[in-house]
Length: 143
Length: 143
DNA sequence: TCCTTATTCAGACTGAGTCTTAATAAGGAA
DNA sequence: TTCCTTATTAAGACTCAGTCTGAATAAGGA
Ligand SMILES: [Mn+2]
Ligand SMILES: [Mn+2]
Ligand SMILES: [Zn+2]
Ligand SMILES: [Zn+2]
Image 1 (cartoon, helix red, strand yellow):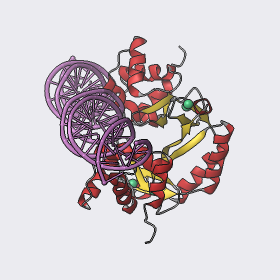
Image 2 (cartoon, chains in turn blue, green, brown, yellow):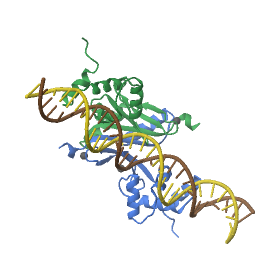
Image 3 (tube, rainbow over the protein chains, first blue to last red):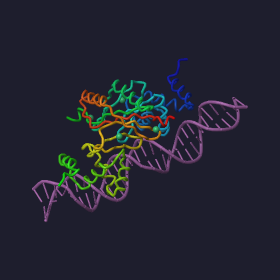
């Protein structure tokens, strides 16, 4: 029998003395499938459409778990929402956010990432995640 | 008669064809006085304590104006609130945020700022502000 | 001084995120 | 396997940051 895709997540839960529930495994699989950026309500809607029964509250309660397990990453925040994305699909990156059309452009810069690490070390700060977003108006919207 | 402190702000409003109202000038002066980080409700409360009558809604409506005029900067976001600070008092910087004790540490890195500019240029993106925060647990809270 | 219209105020509204409570089920002990 | 403890779940109420509406006010040009 091949190792299940949720094996790592299951192990993570056990290591943290969290219960390995069917709900959590289903959520893990549902979330891992998602492409692109999503907020919680959007995620719940998509999962329902895909025939997966999860409650809004259950997702909120398990966000810290998914984040710490590295299943999802926080992407960016608008005035209203926090957006996430599945982490397995692509490597870490940050965001340019157009406040006019709400479109998002991704960038990644290893030098910035390295400098961030140094800063955290200098202040003896254990960074769990960072949010680096440049907000403004994109090329198209300035025309 | 000496030039008023609000001269620059007043000019800014005229340049933008926005009306120079007593409310706006009072808000400008009230905000400029503030030290440290504040969210909107906290700001309104502080201003009321200082005898300045401003409505919550009026502050929200004028946030974009104060931001664009460079009177305030967005500092960081928590799950609930957006925090700002008066920009005149100190030069631009970014933040480390401890999610345990809610304390904030400031850092600034000219190399990162420069790299950000390059990234924005590469995508032909007009950046109005950026939010760069490292979230985690501070030294004290890990003891 | 008058008129147009941006701005203000009060208060209602929206919805992301949290909390409460009772029902359920994971997982350890026997 | 069976039982027991307790973490987890679902439903839905709740909080409050941020937005919107409509009537009253005042900036500023004619
Ligand atoms: Mn992304
Ligand atoms: Mn600061
Ligand atoms: Zn755009
Ligand atoms: Zn701390």
